[in-house]
Length: 85
Figure 1 (cartoon, rainbow, N blue to C red):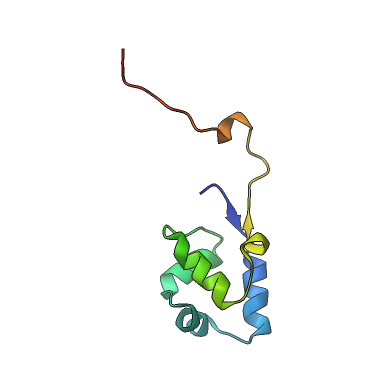
Figure 2: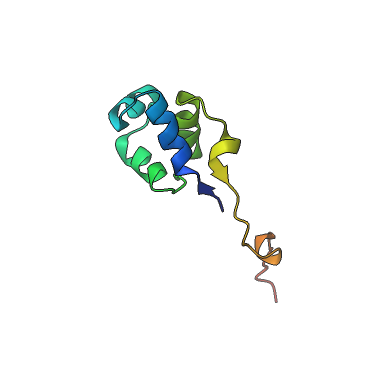
């Protein structure tokens, strides 16, 4: 996925609910390595873990998942490559 995560929004939701990392892991059913990855701004390999965190903190994906704006139009297109000669 070519996107980044709005980490301050997640931290804000945690602060509002007075939740520590351990609380979020328990509430959302993710391990602390996965949550740490999300809090570093990385999209986890299993995208459902990110959605579990968002659901647990009652945040919409539109608030957190940010599409890149600096990507070239051609770079974002799918390309099919054939090995035929």
